[in-house]
Amino acid sequence: MEFVTGAGATNVDLLYQGFDRLADVGEELYCKDFSLQLGGGVPATLINLGRLGINAKIATELGNDIFSNFAKEKFQENSVSPVNLYSGDKIPLNITSAIILPKDRTFYTYGKGTIEPDEKACETFYNMAKGAKVCIMQPGGFIDVYSKLKSEGTIMVLDTVRYEELSFEKYGKYLEIADYYTPNRKEAMQITGKATPEDAAYELKKYFDRVVVKVDADGCIGIDGDDYFFVKSVDEFKNVDSTGAGDAFLAGFIYGLFYDKSLKDCIELGNITGGKAVTAAGALSAYVNEKELLKYKERIYG
Image (cartoon, rainbow, N blue to C red):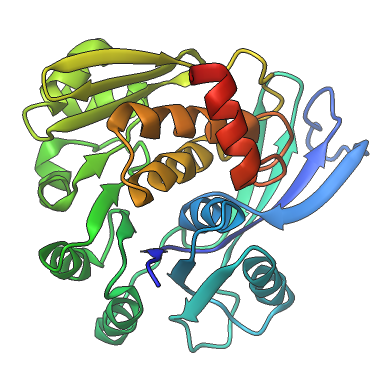
């Protein structure tokens, strides 16, 4: 059975919602709403794909703590099969307290951020990922696995997070392996050194036959061969919390790749899944199933 895979740290979010402001030092405030859920990153994208009916597998680090057990349950509930890369006795996840304000959000996180794999972890990930139709790439220690999967015919999709040193020089090896790269406007402008997302898209065209640049709430730029187009976002989706929007977009985009859709179709699908995700607080609170996704696609984009 064909599947989508990826490796990445598992994030658990404690969401505090309903504050008007942040507390001062020494002050205690009570929030109006609270929830515990998995956070963003590769796990969130794969969970959204599992909800769309696609067989998904993740290589991640899980322990024996309550947060790891919570994550295992959520993976199982959403049809994602985890393979564990961790054998220690600590909490290997990232645990974030997210304070959701009316117009912004702030985060406090425990954890190391990313997985730092050794040779055994790379071997475990490869054995799980071999034969995948699509693999989500993130910068880190798995580049040899990504290269091998690419050589075997897996479609490689690079998803970067904006860092101060985001550049072609630093991430050139990942860009060479990737079939698709899905930056937002800030990431695209930073990695290319261009002043506008349009110029950044054309600069990326030197490296990719098919280019994707997300332009925040406005929509998404696409270049397919010589065809430049812009796919507008879905107006009816009202932004409550943008956490996880990029991960959800990527799920819809990969759904399209999985079923051999055109680049424009993939972006339209991504706009729907990404747009729906922002309508509730948290990375995974609001989503569409496959039937709903296809109905939105027919009604909004045709």
